[in-house]
Structures are given as C-alpha cells and as structure tokens.
Length: 228
Image 1 (cartoon, rainbow, N blue to C red):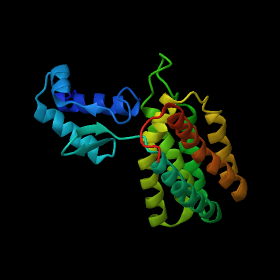
Image 2 (tube, rainbow, N blue to C red):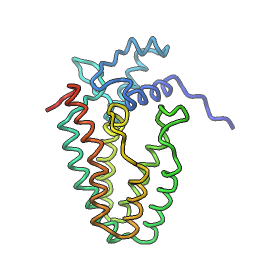
Image 3 (tube, one colour):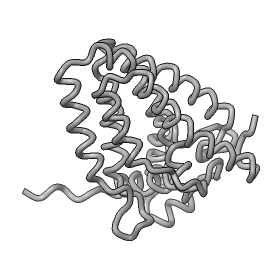
C-alpha cells in the first residue's frame, strides 16, 4: 500500500523547518505570511499554522507587534545553554560509566555503528543528510542511558533538543572545519566502554563546547543577533 501523498501543509512545514535549520532563513529574519502563501500556493491560514508549529519547537518566535521571525542568535542564551549542557551531560556520563551494564554497552556500540556509517551530507556534498542528526542524537542518548536516573536523562535530552538549532547554525554559518567529528565519536565510544570516566568527560566537554564557541565568535564578528 502506497503512503498517502504529503499535504501542502506538511510540505510547507518540511521546507521551512529545513530552511531555518540550514540557515537559508537567517537568524532574526522576518517571516511574511503573504510571501510564503504566494510561494507555496497556500492560504495565509496554512502558513500561520505551520509557523505556529515551528514556534512551539523554538525555531521561530511569534509576537503580536512583529509577527513571526526566525529565532535570534543570542550569545547569552548560547552561553547559558552550553554551561547547563556541560554540567548535566557530564554528570550523566560519569554515572553511566559507573553504573552501566552490558545492555548500556550494547546500546553504545549499535548506535555508534549506525552513526559511523551515516554521511553528514547528501551526495551533492552541501545538503545536510537529515538522517545524521537523528543518529547523532541517538548515540549521545545511548552514552548516558546507563546513568540509572530518568530525570537526569530527561533534562539532558531537553537541553540537547534546545541546542539543535544552534548546532545546525554552527555547521552552516561558521568557517570552522568541525574537527574530526567522526574520530571524536569513535573516541567517546571507546573511552566510555573502557570506563575511563575522566577522559570521557573531558572529551565530551570539548565536544559540547566547541560548536557554541565558534558560533559565538561568528556572531561577534558579524554583529549577528543579540550579543548580550
């Protein structure tokens, strides 16, 4: 049985979400209902519905006076979010290394295997492969899954989700070569399985902090968004 064709609303949602995540709609850019309606051949009601959905995900901001805009690139928010992520994720990882069992180890191995074999971009070399962020998220979830504290895991996943837009902007807006991210993930896997908590925590800290550091440098250099 063939899947039902995507509705215009679903198509618009997918396109606008991708354009925000990939920087084609710039941080702080005003989103005009009329323009999107004309572009996609849909009513302004449909456009508003999609933008409201994106606002609920933190990708777009809605205000009565200014309408819809892409979320600002806020240096203060990036700094606060990164600090919180480092504190929470490193605690969770340290506990996972201490408490994790063979099922935790298997989760790390399997999610890393999938991530390691998923290219970051499509064959054109420029378009982000949307499967990679999903597998990246699953690998990092597996790293801390052995901590034995669902509340800690939930906070970590919530903070990571909040950081997704900034991570994507780091990829498309900065000139950073992204380091050897494949090697970093492989080393995180190996250190966790070797139960080397100190080295694993140090690497995870740098892994979390480098993209925001580069994105903040970009914002200050280009005067983008809210610098704080």
